[in-house]
Image (cartoon, rainbow, N blue to C red; front, side):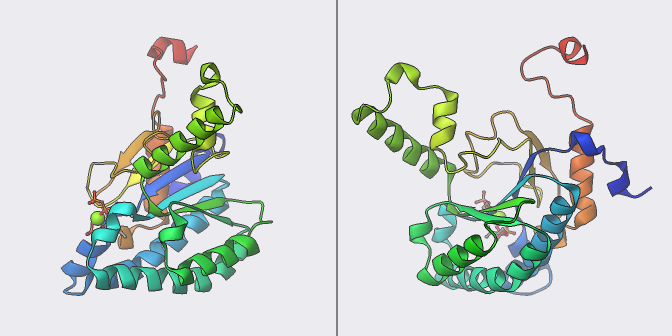
Length: 247
Ligand code: IPE
Ligand code: IPE
Ligand code: MG
């Protein structure tokens, strides 16, 4: 039986988030520049997107470039931005074929104009697709997102649109860049690093975390299925006891 066949269809997570890590180390191991690793990471993105779309996962969120990544050498940042432009162009057909809707979260204004316009074009073109929603986190950091959300809440209070007593978790979720998207049930990080790196801090409150040593450019469908199988074997208690969950 293939790994895919072992999955229980009605227990798939509605939303999977991935910290795609390890491109630089993958390239270094091959005596190549870090950018070579980023280029090969695109294959993994395509595989996972197609696998998620085929399975009927509703939402896939990929951490592609963090606010902190702006501090990398300019040559790497420039290469990543060019790669984004070429990848969005070349992958639009794959997104259309798989009925995938593209979305982006992060400080879009900080991205080069070329990236912004390619992104907007692809988002527009795929906007009526009804399958998987693929969200790219670009120039994204969770603290940035939380700060923006706080500003929106304060403004609503100032404008008498919102009473302080009405501020609850739903109000805050609605002000996040991910408004309307369910919280990830599963968060995967590749490359053996065990940290969150400023990703979806609010939304990951009760996510199952899955870490694997595979470097992102080597991540394939079966690795994705393995993560999903691991998720399906977990007991999610949300503060309750195991006995309460089994009832
Ligand atoms: C992840 O791979 C991709 C980005 C952060 C853009 P890295 O570039 O972080 O690769 P490592 O972690 O240095 O190996
Ligand atoms: C996190 O990876 C950001 C992305 C995958 C885009 P990093 O490689 O930048 O994270 P740290 O700095 O090692 O934690
Ligand atoms: Mg890294």
